[in-house]
Amino acid sequence: MASLPIPEVEEIEAIYGLEGAVEATSRYQRLAAAFKEKYGQAPEIYARAPGRVNLIGEHIDYEGYGVLPMAIRQDTIVAIRRGGDKLVVANLEAEQYPEIEFGTDPAQALDVAKHTWANYFLSAYKGVFEHLQSKGIAAPSPVGLQVMVHGTVPLGSGLSSSAAIVCSSSLAIAAVLGVAGSLTKGDVSEFTCTAERHVGVTSGGMDQAISVMGMPGVAMLVEFNPVRATDVQLPAGSTFVIANSMAVSKKAETADRRYNLRVVECRLAAMMLAVALGKPPGEAAAVTTLKQVEPAIIDKYGPGAEAQDKAVRELLHEGVYMPEEVEGLLQRPLASIYEGNASALRVLGVVGPEGFRLRDRALHVYSEAGRVYGFRDVCKSDAAAEDKLSQLGSLMDASHASCAGLYECSCAELDALVGAARAAGALGARLTGAGWGGCTVSLVREADAPKFIAALREQYYAPLVAQGVVKEKDLGECLFASKPSSGAALMKLKLASHEQPAEAPTQPAAAPAEQEAVMYEI
Ligand code: NG1
Image 1 (spheres, rainbow, N blue to C red):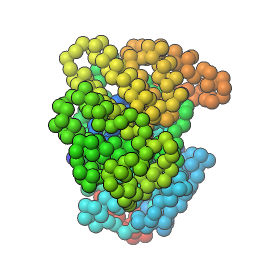
Image 2 (image 1 turned 180 degrees about the vertical axis):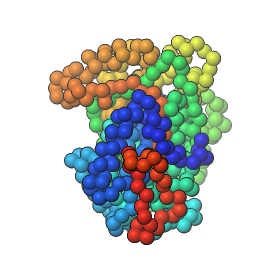
Image 3 (image 1 turned 45 degrees about the vertical axis):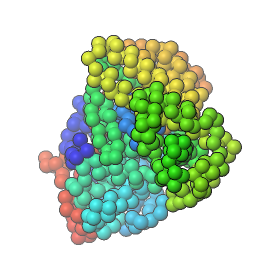
Image 4 (image 1 turned 90 degrees about the vertical axis):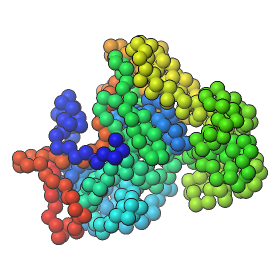
């Protein structure tokens, strides 16, 4: 899967299915019309990349462990052409996402203190050039780009709207620069993960990998170093219902006290485990993930979840570690360990008396990593469908309990929604994505989905509608059953007035003045 090229799709149905084709066509047409009106010409090409729902495996991708997400139908489309001498990034929903301009220098710094939606485009732009450079591929000279974006993945909802815009932008930029043909899905999954970190969140690689490598009809076990994806057939008769708690989690803005803090805590836990297992301080300080310490735990305590749990409880103390304690054991200041890592240094700069809860974070990561393989094994087993459903449901419930209790990435709204989902008949329910707001995912028998959705509407959403938090007419976007959908693609859609599909540039692009642009339109 990772070695496959990026798909180039000519028929809208190939991505959106027959049932979604009409709506998708009208969306591309609106984007094309707005693009033409703004820039005077049609886009050269479109790229799209989906959001995702993570079924199990939360906050463990950055610790090197596999996760189990699926791509969803909601996506981001980017229309693009070469022109002008700037990067002009506009959005079809201009009021909510105002147009922003950047220079074309790929080395320009991204202002993380001033978070804007278009920073994700800029991170993709930088990522394409960084990738070419790292592979020793001659990069085309930077040229001005005219861009128009439209996204349907709800923001701050744990469905990875950020990966959808970074991946679609990266493909659009690579295509218009004539370098998309050299990219595999694995390349794009990896460089978009690194690129997205430019916005200031030290994320793992799950979202970009599934956005690029997602397949219709199957969930994916995504593993890392190197990134790879294996399909996981979900049990017949099951469906996953996504529900938005309506608590918005602003991941980039809150990174120092939430997401990036957890990333720092996991590394500190790994270093403290290494010290407790007898590694000299210098060696322990070089450890970066909990996965790296696992072999030493197995050597001393044996394999398996119980042994791991016992090891962590014995080797790490309860409660809070303060920076001084960690620095004493490592015999060096944390600032020196994190030298050059701006996001970790920002975390260390704001840490208060709440310190670091290392034992709890490690217990979550190791147990959650085990649940991912448990989930995959149940899907692969010969058990009866009903048994599979109940085992998967229990794993999802255990995952939520661990996220809420040990990793503290849930919130009152998510806990209430998970409770309402279980009361409405879910076989299992959990928060999905980074948490602190956003969505839950519930495992439901397919036949029960309409009844389940109706019950959740009544129990969770009716009061929110009454309070004016959400409009009745928008509930379909907050609460829906989801099937695994297609991954990212370049959309070579047919011209309305021509029979021929248009062609994307395959050679490094010349400056627009020297080369006539190829236009794509539907
Ligand atoms: P969200 O915030 O749900 O898109 C984030 C990270 C993932 C992963 C999950 C938690 C980004 C782009 N993604 O996902 O890598 O760590 O949290 O499992 O930050």
